[in-house]
Image 1 (cartoon, rainbow, N blue to C red):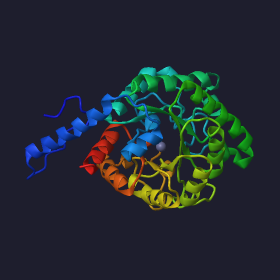
Image 2 (image 1 turned 30 degrees about the vertical axis):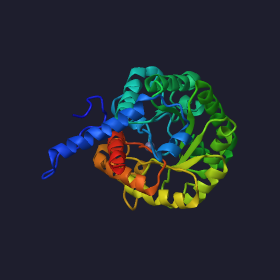
Image 3 (image 1 turned 135 degrees about the vertical axis):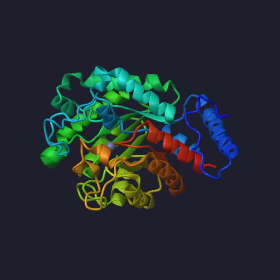
Image 4 (image 1 turned 30 degrees about the horizontal axis):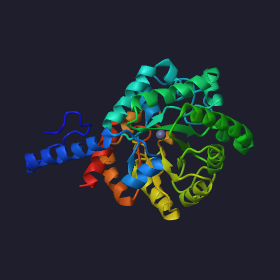
Length: 357
Ligand SMILES: [Zn+2]
């Protein structure tokens, strides 16, 4: 019988499929999985990808915690998604409701995540000031890393999440100096708090991403850099193709490059392929779990954002299928983003296990 501690549930039985074969298959996955998880993770993210081929992350913290009532979407105060908000989706949950954040980390770990992202997304001083938490910038970032580290207990790597500041959207390129100062401060906080690597994510513009990489490469931590493509999937907010973004991020010091958020896996795939053909370093994929359209290929521009997202939620089965695709496509780092929760990571874990057999 499968080990009850195995986070990967038995596959659903299908008509005409021998039950014993299904059980043996499930047990084999668990044995392989638990053997892997017994030993503490002492490798870097780069070594881990090199050895395993593909590493499973997590993702989707803010939307999931908003659904659970611990994060403010700002939807009752302002037009969300314009970048002009006063404090939507900020991460003060790490000090206001640490137990809720801890529980979500536990769920991802149990589901199979080999990396836990500290919830430091939108954690720059300026963004936190807009939600009234600017003076707590240090303790919010430190607490987020500490909570992730405590849950990981050496069984997963801890990533520090660094995101766009929204200042380029609001002020244009004249914000570059302020952006540099804000990102420098947050990256220093994350380095001091002891993250294993930095995940620079959800940047709409390449120029802002390159500033983030400039701030981050002064340290010795490995860097994953992922762009989010909005409003088009063919170019970044400042007009660079996925291939150009991938090359520029690599040249600026990222060891792993890719895309995250905004699109469901299928729609993100062409972006990932274009990046993979442009560079010879590992590709990261963290798609959203919301269905977008040809006209609006980014969920934060859909009319359902943020209060009707349930109506465009995709099934976890699409994540299971995507894990198999990702493995076949040579993706090195796989996770989720908005709309994803532990059920989706478990589906990714099962998809990867199935791809390995
Ligand atoms: Zn997202």
